[in-house]
Image 1 (spheres, rainbow, N blue to C red):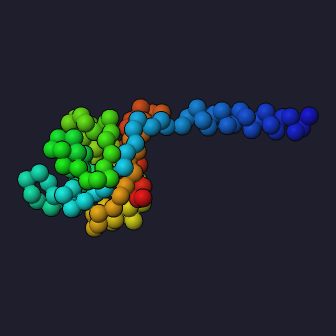
Image 2: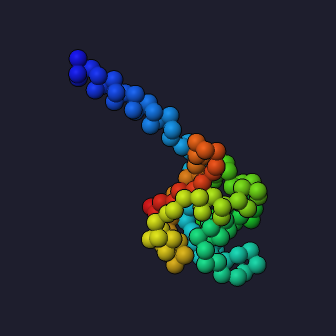
Image 3: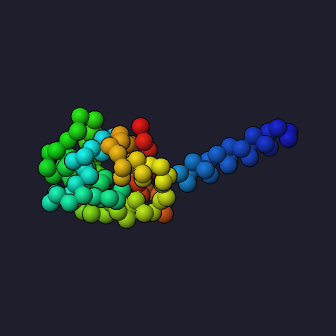
Length: 127
């Protein structure tokens, strides 16, 4: 009987945890090359959000793409690219990732997430 109660409690807990999981809106991989480290008017970018935003503007608006860049369904919107900085600030990410993006040309995976609370945020991973 005790084993049954423990299993029942575990299933209830798992159901509660999965019900509160954030959902993914889209995911893509991008090479953040030297072209993505310069604004459209030529000045250097030294901020993670600005570099990722420029990468997506290069991809969607200017057709400037690196071989590893993947398409996404979210940042084809100018409005969503404008909101990118706020989305990045909603979650902390590893300072090592920030340094790699600012100082190098890493391959990254970008996940655009929808929180249960309704806000959208971005997670970054180096590949």
